[in-house]
Length: 194
Image (tube, rainbow, N blue to C red; front, top):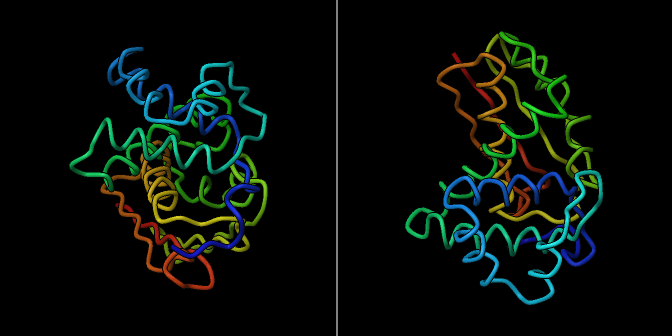
């Protein structure tokens, strides 16, 4: 797996961790969450049992370990689906909450055009661009991210699928034709809907 930086120095917002923990609680309550947490190192368990603040920055590698533990517990037979579901849950939680201003019913392009601003809600370094390709398609590109993993990219695919649905798109398809983790110079997400 290629990286664009050291995961130990990369950071991610607390909103991501909160949405992951809430997803696990929704799919099995506190007992399921304990099952996930027990798969993590003691320091991670201690941190995740404390109050996670949505606007604080947390280590990206903590998020990677949490995501892997969630996938192991919730969907060991289909890890790809598990990571995409985590992204979808994050979009649901954040776009129906604090980031609701990015959703305009019937206007997926409005949300996608806000990709540069939305990116800053989640990542400390790098940028994302938006290019409208047609009435029901766009491409997003991520440049300069500190750390890129295939699994985090799957959560981004799931996030954008759900975000477009929340904006009124149907039969949403988000593909990831270029990925830094696979040697590309940047990541691309092709978004299409009916």
